[in-house]
Image 1 (cartoon, helix red, strand yellow):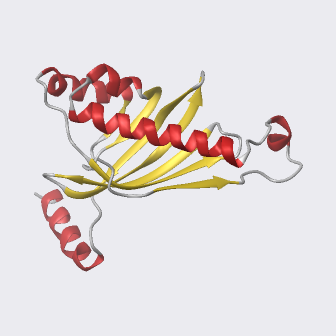
Image 2 (tube, rainbow, N blue to C red; image 1 turned 45 degrees about the horizontal axis):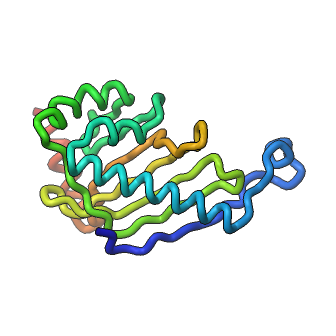
Length: 170
């Protein structure tokens, strides 16, 4: 259940007269809003599929060349690597549940690229943050990068860094 507010921004990328803007017709604000809502829907589906361990639906939302960055520094996975990690969990019916608290979606004016940041809640990790990018390919929005982080309050950052360094030195 969505508890936050979807914020949509129209990004006026590119310089006037550049070949990029001449090659692509900018979408209207109404069209960009439709695209932003479609991106929002993809992200909502992503979290729903993960919580239900729906393997096919979850990974169909990623582009073939997608990268997933997890909360651990070692977790930089291509889609195939992420599939290898997730499949045994999903096969046992164990996904992961992140509940959206807020989300910001930004769509480039050509309607082919979008990026987002979202605040999520997870029972084990508490407040987390997801961010990433999507591209429109063959008429569908696909996630090309998802980055999941655990925001650390500045007042705790020094202590957290000390603990990580101590662990790394073991």
